[in-house]
Amino acid sequence: MLRIGTRKSALALWQAERVQGWLRERGHACELVPMSTEGDRILDRSLAEVGGKGLFVKELEQALSERRADLAVHSAKDVPFALPEGFALSAFPAREDPRDALVAPRAKTFANLPRGARVGTSSLRRAVQLLAERPDLAIVPVRGNVQTRLARATGATVVRGGVERRPAEGDPQGPLDAVVLALAGLRRLGLEAQVTEVLAVEFSLPAPGQGALAIETVRGSAGFLATVPLDDAQTAQCVRAERAVLARLAGGCTVPVGAHAVLEGDRIWLRALLGGPDGRGGVKVVRAERRGPAAEPEALGRSVAEALLDKGGAPLLEAARSQAEGLPAPKRA
Image (cartoon, rainbow, N blue to C red; front, side):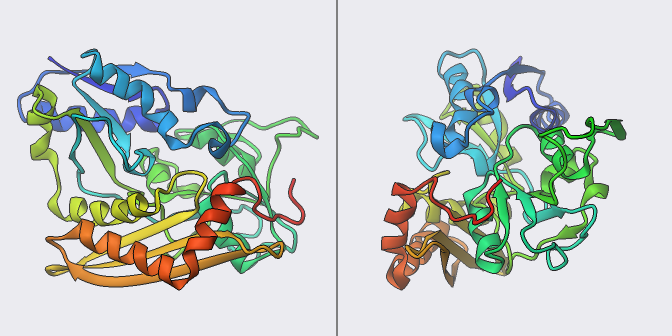
């Protein structure tokens, strides 16, 4: 019996159940081992303040280490670039659409957001790109599961298949003008109808690994051997290139890093960005892109990261690390 470690959120359970189904199709008996992570429990502070996205995987890795789980299913964008010794990302199944999505019930599109609009996101990567385009926006930190964050824009608690309730008049946690979420998560939960605009990657470059699942195991274990066949080679090449950018920049939630790779035959087209405060009360975004052999995704990722540093990213990187809470939002709510 293979035990699949997973977070308890609706999205995490959907992802784990999908992997469970694939393994069962291959003849493996499986059961889910849901658990709460520190990232799920701490909702009153940003991830940058409390330790980054690694808080979503720490307990799952502990379960793997203690043999309470044979594999763990993560959103690839939540997995830190450095893994514990002896651990492996044994499979990246075929990827969902990696783009970001805007939910703005009144404005509908980013271009139509009113001046000073309150936009919800706790992603520094999204925040710097939004502010680079529209310095007038007020970025509002929003934590919690997909439905909780979605509710801040719709004014209602959205559940699969419909609306459960609407907040009382004057609720301080009431509607924002918009929230930005990963399109993949909304699709997986059957909530894509709430999306009012899918943001082009040229405008909002995704996080490394966004839209992909990552299966983590102890190298050489039963879980490792069972999940390696679930790896999608094309997805793996692209995600490994994106994660190599993250690794070279030692990026996490305190450093706004985006990366998006596309396979073009036997080559990969990789675009990346690094953002941070510009020292004048605004934000600066540095971008770089290159093409390289698909057989060497990590080398391409490191190369693009070096290009970011060469284009002025080094001081930006230091500024972002030292001022994780210093992103300007002139009308911050």
